[in-house]
Amino acid sequence: MIISHKYKFIFIKTAKTAGTSIEVFLSKQCGPTDIVTPIAPPVEGHQPRNYQGFINPIPEILERPHKVLSALRYAITSREKFYNHMPASVAQKRVPSRVWNSYFKFCVERNPWDKVLSHYHMHNAREGGSLALDEYLARGRFPINYFRYTNDSGAKIIVDRVLRYENLLAELSEVFSQLRIPFDGKLGVKAKSEYRTDRRPYQQVFNEKQRRIVENAFAREIGLHGYRFE
Image (cartoon, rainbow, N blue to C red; front, side, top):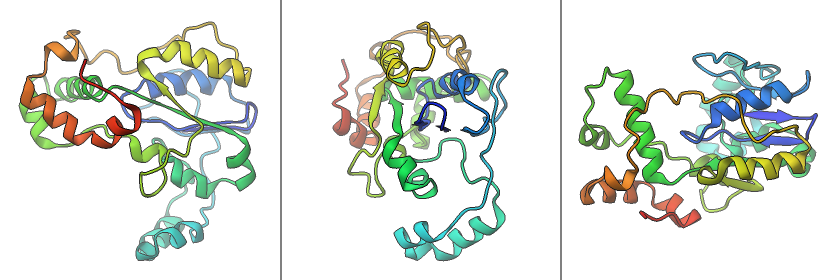
């Protein structure tokens, strides 16, 4: 995630939505006092900074009183006040209210079937090409994102804009123009894009059973954004 005091925005990083590429680009634009969380493994050109600090556990304890011990333990032992893929609901508790209320908050979301296919190819590549799609789907570990940009109950979007991955560069151009971030229409990097060699569209890959598995897993995101298998 990124909190830019220079341009007054908060970028919430979601999974399999070009988040790393966006972070690398934005980290080069950010000022020395901005907050940029690390990426693992590190990506060339990315410049993390200012993400460590004291964590006040009280706001999180008040929201989740049943997790008092874990919140206290994390506050005492962790030096990462901000971290990669941090949900907006957690960031809201860790930044001053004036920052949260006045900065422009945005993230990116993606058609769930396309997102799952990208996630599958990443895991298949990391496992040496031996992972079958059905085996991947049976694991049930999907790149679900809605909790990263909604409130604690997942019912309400709490960022100012959810950009569509399907129209990413055009929508980034609008946001960056609004924030006065220099942008020539290209991010200049395609991080983690090397995993997917089969470029068939998801409609040609998923059978009916596989399609329904994804539809059920991503019901909340489909409801929030109106995605369809089309």
